[in-house]
Image (cartoon, rainbow, N blue to C red; front, top):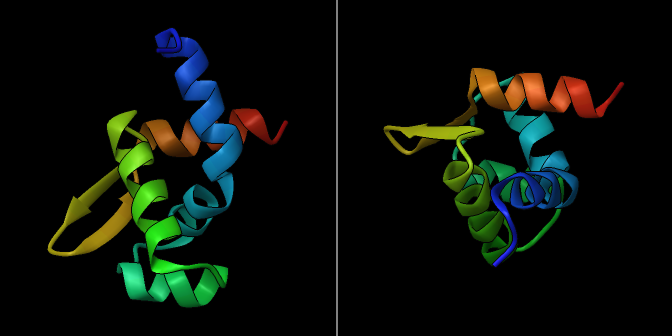
Length: 78
């Protein structure tokens, strides 16, 4: 298993489009599938990865970027 910092970098690099979408506004998974033009299983894995590292939270079936997620995304886009 990758060290924690490496895991965070890997997830952020791979899941940035999902995080970017959720940083703009919260969304349900079907909406993410439509917006990102990808499969439901891809969205499921991306959201699970982002929740695991604390960059996305879920409330009432809606997913949103956390403050940590927004900051990490901003830092990555520098």
